[in-house]
Image (tube, rainbow, N blue to C red):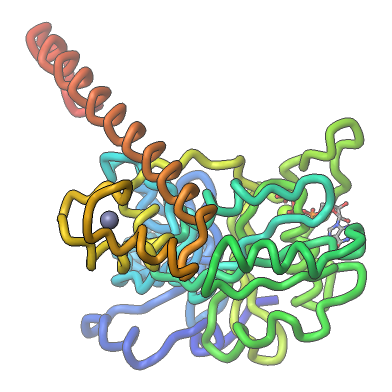
Length: 338
Ligand SMILES: Nc1nc2c(ncn2[C@@H]2O[C@H](COP(=O)(O)OP(=O)(O)OP(=O)(O)O)[C@@H](O)[C@H]2O)c(=O)[nH]1
Ligand SMILES: [Mg+2]
Ligand SMILES: [Zn+2]
């Protein structure tokens, strides 16, 4: 299907071209799988060796030809990178690269969970990708518009849509699609990500499966991150496996998801203001004037506390590993596994 597609349909542009050294060939990673990357190259879809897991779906990479194999050379500088952050940056899990807009999908049936949505937005917060909340399965909800308003209140400045794969998309996601653009869906299993991808593709490209009846949870139907080229030059869409409700483990990510409060806090009189009862606190002033809601402030404080705890735990763990490392080296064992 993606055979002989010009790279410009996948988002290749002059700025990307400027990253190439003379003689290099570029390709975009559609999916990765056990030491291999399926890429779209000028010659068509190819499978390359991926000796180290350096690339993720959505990456632009160079193709290296060796005598008996072709492999991924280097990864071109990413414009955006969605990852699950570990406190130390080392254990980060890359979810998708070079995504312009991330559709955070959550369903409007009994699975609706605002706190989880906030957690996801904190994961995408500092990726560089724009966040759009896509509430799914509107056909199963008596009043989707009330939910939309609820999320809008929780996440000011973030576009929020109610959709239904059953009703059809009717162009609801069009503002974020277009030539050269890349969008991706992120959310827990069973919320209907692949169903929306199929609606965009106009075809049942991705497998969709009913949820388990007992608990309405997903079945983890999609198992790979996969980039698909949309028809009619509307760009690319990345379908992803459902991820569990995530722990928030990076204070940086929380800070970017709550950039509005961070900006207010800049104006506090004291740098270490706790936004409690300090004089000259801009955050408390914003609360009083109604510019900031109590609810949003509480969510910010909670997530920040959680991320701080997580980071501290990460540091302690690494300190522990160091001790182990020196014991191992004392025993004369191999070190490179650390
Ligand atoms: N009523 C209704 N059901 C939907 C809608 N979208 C998806 N479903 C159903 O929800 C179930 C899960 O849909 P999927 O598209 O496979 O969900 P997913 O998010 O891709 O799940 P994973 O791949 O496991 O992460 C399927 O039975 C779909 O038919 C919708 O808009 N309305
Ligand atoms: Mg799926
Ligand atoms: Zn303050």
